[in-house]
Image (cartoon, rainbow, N blue to C red; front, top):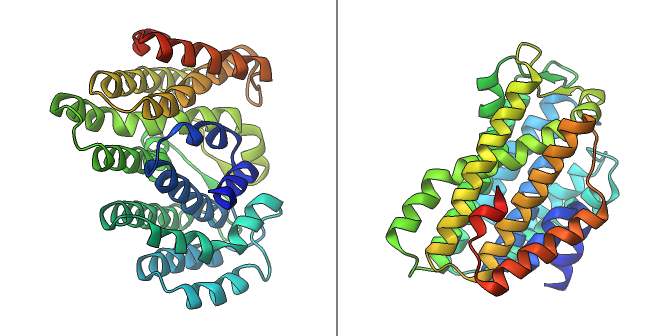
Length: 303
């Protein structure tokens, strides 16, 4: 896990904090899945590439991921890095190790591997369709709330579906009613986290030619949607708790939702770009672990 953890730290602070809560084998599965999604994100966000090159890379990545042809993937990676799609050092280090990350799939059970590959490929293919809507320079502008929801599904709703399938695969004794509630709220769980990121990063994204917040939709409406999704995410976590899911599943999802809710409040109060202080993160972790230790209901903590 050492190399995977290092890549997580260099590409996502939130997931680097949350993923270590997961028990094995789910921790390794989710680590690899996140890194595969991050590679696809790097192609989608490839501001140094043309639109056509981004689309080709996303489609090629999805194909090679399904084939798990590591020698071909290593040669393809060299081509992707010349020139690189972005400037972010962590993303480029991850991209350089694409074949090694894909190689980690062989350490998983057949069932888990199939889940990760299917959903990561779906996202890469969906991102290619999103990029195809951009202009020749790769500038993208969403025009409606449904556009925004469709985009969030491709990049995050599918992640929610992947997590739910892995949780149920790795914990087959989960109660049937809880499994149903997980599946009901899984897309909203992913959409909530993505909407908060979009609201937080709106300024930086616009500078890079990506306008995800439609001009025709009041910002208050997007904020309200994010709040509703976070409420459904709280229901998702409650279903994990009541279904007898491992503590690590509850902690992983709980810390992600609590940080997202705190970030959304900061955005509402101070606007795009607002961040929560490190002391808030420390407090969230302490309150969540205290609730897990005491067996308290997590639903109230998430609201």
